[in-house]
Structures are given as C-alpha cells and as structure tokens.
Amino acid sequence: MNRPTSTALAALSLLSVAALTACGGSSDPDPATDEPKAGSSKSASTAKAPTPAEHLAATIVTKADTDGFEVEEPDDEYAFAESTDEVTVDKPVCAPLAYAMNQLPLGTPEADLTRLTSGPTDAPTQLTKGVTFTYVTLASYAPGKARSTFADARKAVDACGDGFTAKANGNESPYDSVTAEKVTPAGDESLGFTSTMTFRGVAHVLHGEVVRSGDVLAVYFSVDGMAIANGRPSDAKLSPTVVKAQNGKLG
Image 1 (cartoon, helix red, strand yellow):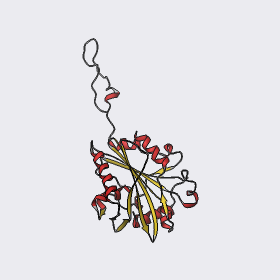
Image 2 (cartoon, helix red, strand yellow):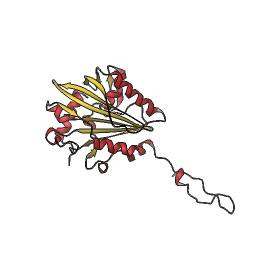
Image 3 (tube, rainbow, N blue to C red):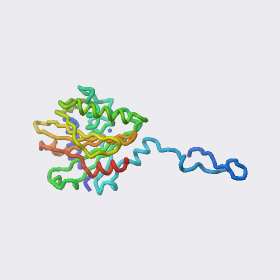
Image 4 (cartoon, rainbow, N blue to C red):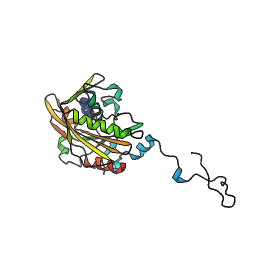
C-alpha cells in the first residue's frame, strides 16, 4: 500500500506552516374508476433527489476508480486551516487560490468533500524522489453559484501573477507567483494554474486545476511534501490518473 507515512504527513505539516478542508407519493389511477389505486408507489422518475452531500459522496473518486491509487480522507491535524473563515489573504482577489492550494472549498457551497490520493504509477521516478499527493475537493452549489465561483477563480489567476500571502492560525504561506496553465478541457469549463513558492531557499512548483460540471466544482492540487521537508526542489504535477477518473465521474 502507498498510504502516507507519518514522516510524509509531517512533511505536509511543514508545507502548511511554510507555504500553504420515503417521500410520500401520488398513485396511478385505476383504469376502471379513474381513481388512484390504494398503496401504489411513487414512480422512480419522481423519487426523492439526493442531497448535495449525498451526491458528492456518490461522486467522489475512489481507489477502484484510480487503478490502485490510495484514496483516503486527509488528516485535519496537518491542515493549514479547517475552514475559509480562518484564512486571511493580503490580496483578497487571490483568496480562491489560497483555498484551492489548502484543500478548502471555494466560495459558499452547500456541501463539500475532500480526498487525498497518492501513488507513484504516473511517474516511476517518484519511487526515488518521493510520492506526489493529489488532493481532490468537490463542492456542490446552489444554481448559478458554481459558475460565479469559477469566475472568481479565473479572476484570481489573472490578477495574482506576482504572488500573494495567506495566513491562518499563526501560519504563513507566501506564494511567489501564479500563472495560468493549459489543461485538458473537462466539464463545462476548466482552469489550470501553476504557483511557485520558496521554502528555506529552495524553489518549489505547485499545480492546481478547477473544473466546473453543472453546479459542482472539482478542485485539484498537488504537492511533494517530502521534497519540501528535505530541502529538495520539486515540481509536483497533478496525477492524470486521478484527474481523469474524477472528471469522468462528474460527467
């Protein structure tokens, strides 16, 4: 198994500190009386719709979807912040990027869910250089809100080229730069970005992606925590296996 070790999770903690969350039914009429039949059940087409949380739980990527990648809930102990309310950004327009790179949902969703995925199969060199973690955060919004929240993320990428700093719970995460990155089109609209950071004099490149499918946003973010902890330069690309699998489930 490729579950993150305590050492790897400790590295993610360092990253957080330095650089970085039934129904009642009508019945069919009786042909003879044109009155509803007693005890008839409601048709499947009018069955109760799942709640936003239930929909995300059924849609979030799993190990079975990712050809053996480990997929688990992230440990809150190593989170930069547990909610967006705890985060302040020196440039408010950049807030969506601060949230995206710290596993927090963008905007004001009705429900959200995050998974941590890991696996070296996309890049054999990771066997010696460390495992890249790809975070997946799904969020469901009221009608129209996902579109406007996505627009805010696009605005952040355009406006935050010279970087920004996020703070939460005494931790500070300075990002040196942000640039748009071309990604494979997915969902109704998609957006990729690259961010750079410097920790203890060592440069690191981080990658993220936001995909809107209807009223759901999928946010992806990747990091090589061990490289950061060990003072080794890193370029933590998103796992194409994970991104493709999750986008496929969103439709």
